[in-house]
Image 1 (cartoon, rainbow, N blue to C red):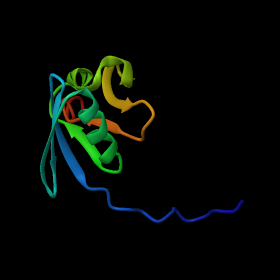
Image 2: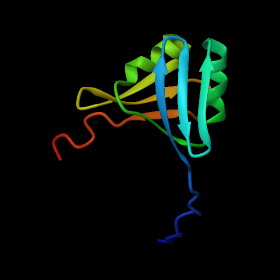
Image 3: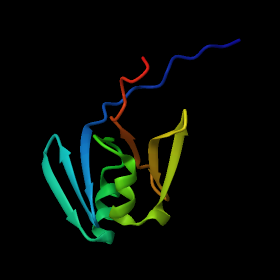
Image 4: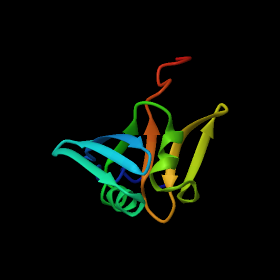
Length: 102
């Protein structure tokens, strides 16, 4: 059995997202970015695909930014924990209930 070391780890900047109706605000280490409109929200999320993306509240609010047809949810213990934007590498995690049942 051959054991190889893990690959080189890369630092991914952390970005906090605040979704709204056809609007999203991204708090990045470089400043605040606001996108309004369905296509602008999609383009902004594509730009941030190599960031660690988080929302502080419910992930369901992301459905209002680009439309529900673009998102796929992952469920753990009956609750949505991560949402992925179809066709991209965008994954958004929720910080809600992060310390529940630990």
